[in-house]
Amino acid sequence: EDQVTQSPEALRLQEGESSSLNCSYTVSGLRGLFWYRQDPGKGPEFLFTLYSAGEEKEKERLKATLTKKESFLHITAPKPEDSATYLCPEVDAGNMLTFGGGTRLMVKP
Amino acid sequence: SQTIHQWPATLVQPVGSPLSLECTVEGTSNPNLYWYRQAAGRGLQLLFYSVGIGQISSEVPQNLSASRPQDRQFILSSKKLLLSDSGFYLCAHGRGLYEQYFGPGTRLTVT
Image (cartoon, each protein chain N blue to C red):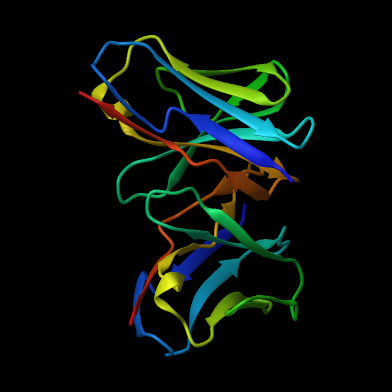
């Protein structure tokens, strides 16, 4: 079972103020590190899967990176439409995703 | 491309009434299918998943049931709703185990 901890719980940014969200994990055999985005009233949207330390993936203003202990979701020059809850689900003992509360990101214009 | 449909979008039902929520997927065959529930301000709770027709695994004991009568159809049911069944119900299909794509959801209010 993978154990994943997200931080911070909430983050407020001004438009254009770059920052990072963190997802730290404690597992010896990582089956993958996943990032999802959820807008209010909608289901989560798959963003990235990272499998090995050093791996990076990008999508628009988002860049996900992975080290041996943690993953960062870097948000460059965020816009109000980037406001959402960003989720980093765990993989449980039954090989199912477990979605926690995530990080609530609010970007103010 | 793959599309996932859910209906209805919203539903208000009295306690003790039956429930049937439907989910269909287009553009893929033999997908893994999932039902999740999300209470207000909370994370997603996996209710059921299915790897094929007639194959249903339940994650949480409750008064809900699921069925998969066709390859791309997944149904969530209840014979008698409880107040605690209120929530946002999401169907998802999976590309592999961890890359999941969610439908628009059904917001259920039990009164």
